[in-house]
Image (cartoon, one colour):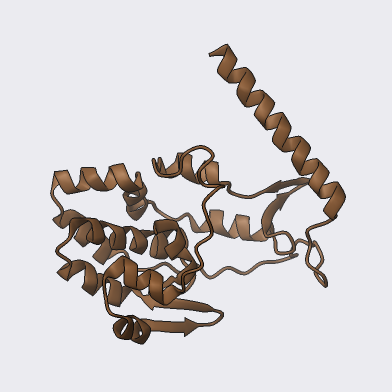
Length: 217
């Protein structure tokens, strides 16, 4: 155990040294034209996706299928029952630093890490040293959706919508595919995409953003 502890300590020191050296060489990561400044006042209007259909789909699965889902995607279904604390969201928004895309409290910058998401959701797929070395996938959103859903290119292209600066697919379309899909693996994969897109990383109400697909794929 002591050997493992020393190994982790050495690795942490190596990462810190690399981070400091990179910061010194490349300078500040702030984008040109931006400034680091906390808002004097922040108004937050909290909205949530309706998760009832996700809960109904989960309730229809038997114990064996649920266990298979846990083994593949961790405990993300527990997020369906988490109550959002609006006062906490307002407090966090007050400390959001848009220049660095993180929360700044005093002189400390806070942002969720891959390790923290892994611990929170207990995701077995995100193993040590693997999440950082994943080969970039240059497939288009269309091809990724075709691979995930098994649908035709023409059908998929007809479902992709532009919402603001994001390409998305509606939860309604994904829900219908889940209900008629006969293959368990594809059904679970699309269900996981629904949770990640509507609950964990929502951007547009009722839609799953394209970038979320990379997590599930």
